[in-house]
Image 1: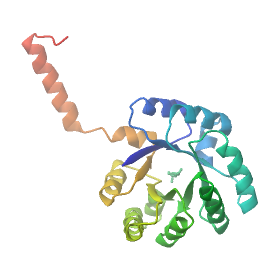
Image 2 (image 1 turned 60 degrees about the vertical axis):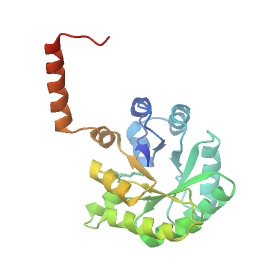
Image 3 (image 1 turned 180 degrees about the horizontal axis):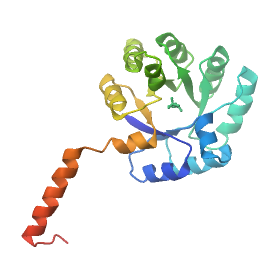
Image 4 (image 1 turned 90 degrees about the vertical axis):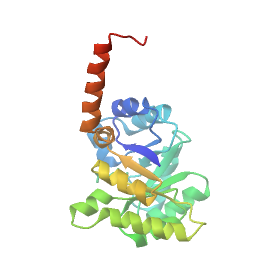
Length: 218
Ligand code: E4P
């Protein structure tokens, strides 16, 4: 399973890339606004640090505008994935870019029917937003299960399920159990994945006992 980080903060991206466990990055207009920096500069710096897909979202909502913006974004680096919304224009733009070999992440997916359309449009990634579904009383992980089941029925669907709007470590674990290809995870949740109180307690005991031996390894 691939781990992407969901942020436009280059400091956090550098820190997590240094673990060697990061496979890509997703950004969106809200994350860019939060970072408070020039979008193109952030993307250039990110693509230099992370060699995997870096999602950059178009702001246009019409097909021609999406093509114009997507072409400009794609020039930044070969690992840019153009992010388009799940609308008819977005799907048309998806088909346009993927047929030219440019990666596309179709975002704002909230139903299995939408995910089916994205696969038919040749999307590289489909981004179902699990946290936002949970927020309105629906079951985000159930949607992931449905999409994984549908995509598995058709060998010619190459679209990867990119679990987005992740809110906690269990979203990541359930996504992995369902066989989702990717999870894009906020930095705080990614850091939480390693934590377990018994690990901390066990390590403290081992260190204390090691001290008692009076030995050194190096
Ligand atoms: C995915 O690409 C989105 O940027 C992101 O996961 C949205 O998450 P949110 O619902 O926490 O804003």
